[in-house]
Image (cartoon, rainbow, N blue to C red; front, side, top):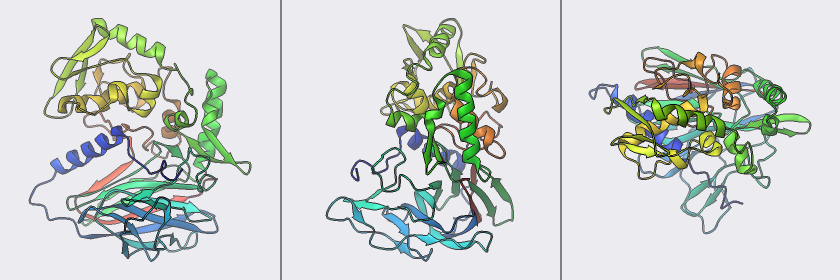
Length: 408
């Protein structure tokens, strides 16, 4: 289990993160001073739990080493490679938060890439090391994982010499509500409130109602422990547990899309140097001349935004700009209502055509402000529109406030 649960980002998320970093960097003047070497982060405990713990993990920008913070919230710990798999951390890295409603816990983070700020209630998350070193992160789909019955969650961030970029994430599951507030050195603020306290209960109730409404097993996404809702899995995560989950769910829709674009051009604004590109279905392939051809995706590929037509390995740069926008349109089921993606559809148009990604619809409907990453390319945004993924970013960050609330 410990070997298999080493966390790896999907190709969809890797491409997504690279695009976010590139887009954010390109909007800044090259003469802007670099960000500081450390950033102040304040952790607010809005739970009613006995104890909340935080962990910080990532890859150091300075030397590309696996990096954690020690329990004091300031000391950098870069573990050596262990001799075997499943080794414990050589340092206590569980940062205890202050009591609920009290002063925030202040920590300082170094410049990190692909980083996560984790929270758990009651007990610290159990992390392990494999040779490399590689961090073995908790799993919500492995019944043998030592954290499987623990309430835990995370937000993601990259902090480098150009910017801080952070977002809440419900791509894999929904559990502890997390909110972000970023203040820059000029005093400007960006806020992503996330789910309300007890939001997982609302998500689970809506999943149950959706299952009754359309007859599909959305209730199977609900994970309970000790008679209470613990978390709600995303469809992609549930497919990792039950390979047959919602098989064929999107088939009729995909067939309708393919039929439409046999005679109609699909135009995708790459929102990059390639500009607008148009394609249509011929010979069973959705073809964008000079960029690439895409076969029909399966339900599992749509939910995961990975594999099949969404496989980024070996894809051209132009195809890498098409893939996220095509995957988002399938999850939001906007391809039959507009032939212009992503600019022809806006948040009010998302998830209105059955079948659709009901998990993503429910997450956005429950989150305050409607923002939160619900599938890997949920940051695809109409030009000039509001990013739905629940992100904050700045080239001059001063303080990042992170608030964690109760599951129930």
